[in-house]
Length: 581
Image (cartoon, rainbow, N blue to C red; front, side, top):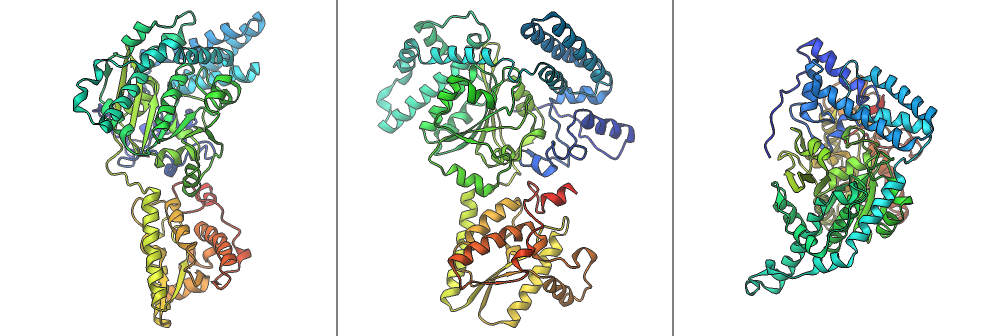
């Protein structure tokens, strides 16, 4: 799909523009430097968004961004602000009956509204969230549309399990002709494709969940619905995805009502062997599906009774791989937000899942604007399903061609090659040593860290005979993050083929610089493996491995010194504490 190119934002050329650009992120509370605990770091965002020429990602449509950057405050922006305001006013009228409370809330939100929009810097969806939060905090209503959502979900569930739906869904018509040209395998594939497309066309029946008095379509009407044309360039990629073996799919849910149709499709995909992670909102936001709904709505509770819920806000690649090996095909996760899709505010778990999937399926027009219609490219293939003038529109955006992804199968294969080298060395009577040291723990010093490690390992080789040393710095490849490396190395380290596990000491580092005929730079003075997040994690593994293999020798700083580091900053090679400092 082609997109209108927008001018690349170049910071550092025009101070007035740069100030407005920076103010845009500050005003919308999406600046990672000002709000590091709320906004994802550059590295985290790059799990989802592929950066082009250092461009900074923004969570709105290209048109909205251009309008705000123009500083002209045109009618388009004012109208969008007014729509957000009117939506909140309608909610107050619908849910607040006491006249004083009704008028107070409207007056309070109007004051806040006027204060927020005067610069024209605020993204309308962020304004909407601000006003919505005021409503929640003043009324103490946790899930304003809970009853409405439950009612419409119950209605749609009744529709898709109705007798007419069953008859129409299972009807055989001329769509299978000519049948004589199909093998049994081909026939089975064709039947699955027909059922899948029929379920997709039900998305067009929006009036069933948006109009309270709408009636269920008759048997003949359902058959006509199944023949609804599908527009856009996404159907073939979607069908190709479905036909592949055991794909991992991230499904971004949207509104209640349609969520029941979504889950019917998700279950169909699960029955074919695919793994689907179903993403909902962390907290209630109008009629969008949220975690609270999955616990309180009887229909959703029943629909998801066999799903596995991922509640961790931070998850490593290793943990995610183990999790997806459960005997489950459907998982539920929160995106960590209470607003329209905003990748800057998602949890690290959601970001990791986004990166590790085979495809992202998004729902609705807003998600289409921000994911498909946007000029930004992503780390995943994205397919969007939405309505366009009562027609089903399926659009597709391939992941950026330069994005490098290492699947857990890729990393396991690399680990097994290293293990085979270790086995071969052992057979030749060699002693196997694993050397753990600083690689990325000092930001911006990866190249010198690799040189230090290799220099010292070469020194050890010269000092010892029949010693096979694993040098981790040799195995880094472009596109790998710390989690990828840790996943690969843990497989190697738990293989039981290590005789000596040596952790880098400050003496090792000093010796390396001496061998290079250099003085130790200030940033390296006193450093050892305890400064490294990866080494800290590896020491924990080493202690466990030594319990199983007491003859394995540990050399390096004492175990009690490994206290400073805990978790990598997501996408980084150094500790989160260093990222925050």
